[in-house]
Image 1 (cartoon, rainbow, N blue to C red):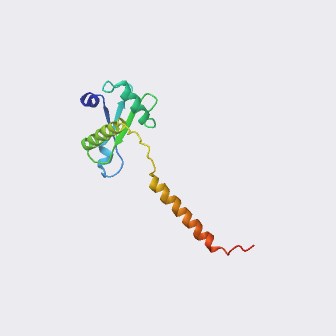
Image 2 (cartoon, rainbow, N blue to C red; image 1 turned 30 degrees about the vertical axis):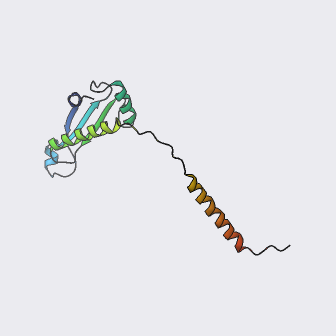
Image 3 (cartoon, rainbow, N blue to C red; image 1 turned 60 degrees about the vertical axis):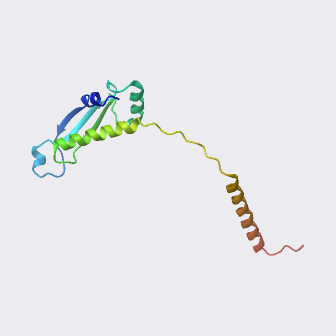
Length: 134
């Protein structure tokens, strides 16, 4: 994955934000919307694209565009940095390899201990019953 090429493919759009900021909210477009065309990206290989399409299956639209927004800060610059960092974090998380699961074996001593405990409990409960005299 070429990070600089990936950053050059990002499209930003500033829109008016809601939330804190008073009258500043009504005048300045501080919220940043990031658009990333996953299917047309040249920074990612075909294998990486397929893996990310599965990872982002609920976040990308029909055209294969991932849309992220950031409006936490009152600064457009900080929101742009925030949304870019979030995208890069999501991409690295989506490309992470899953570890193979090693099946574990229950040791013989543990099985033996469990069966002994079951037998002792059974005997204890059997001793509570009145003797059977026939």
